[in-house]
Length: 249
Image 1 (cartoon, rainbow, N blue to C red):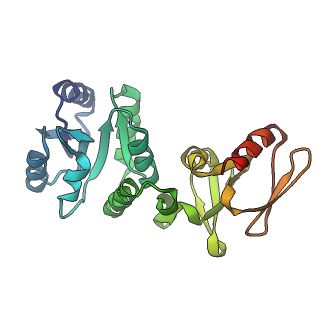
Image 2 (spheres, rainbow, N blue to C red; image 1 turned 30 degrees about the vertical axis):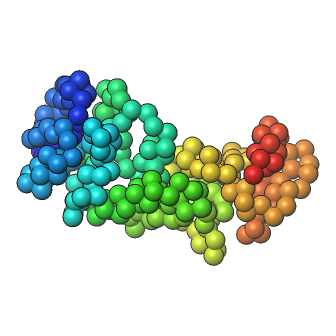
Image 3 (cartoon, rainbow, N blue to C red; image 1 turned 60 degrees about the horizontal axis):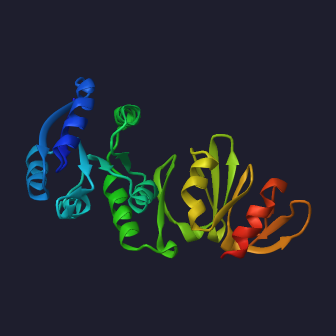
């Protein structure tokens, strides 16, 4: 049983998540419900929970401010929030779990299943550190992304990524300095994450950082010469979108 704290200042949200979590009484034990940062901090320090469901907005404060007040974060965090594109991007970049309000039953089920499979908390503090970094620095130039590797989580700067190449359910990430990381995520995962930050999927197998293009060679679809010396094909059906994206940077 995982000791669980719900932190939310809206009663209807507390009622909703409590009702949904009641289906998982063999997995989660709700030991405390808090409605503000001060009470939540005291409860976390006293109870030492295994997992918290943390609302992003708590009266005039935020869940982020709560986390900053804690000396040690050794529990799983599942953020709950009404849709906020910037916060959601930060969660994704930091590999932290989140649920959009109103919480969907299927989304919660998937989150709980992931929670059951987690065996190590060693990366939680680092994930939160990267989250704060990305929230405080809104420029792409300094954004960091958490990627799961065989050794654990690796944290890399977005601007260090030259290109990504699909390998079925894996993705090879090619970085500055001739480094390569292989990740057990599909290319679609990285396309969704990185496309707003000047990345473009030129082909079924390739996602490239537009800032690392040295030359575009015209043709039916054409191809690009990347700064690391690779030639990447541009699919015919993507050529127009590619040229529009290229001209906008």
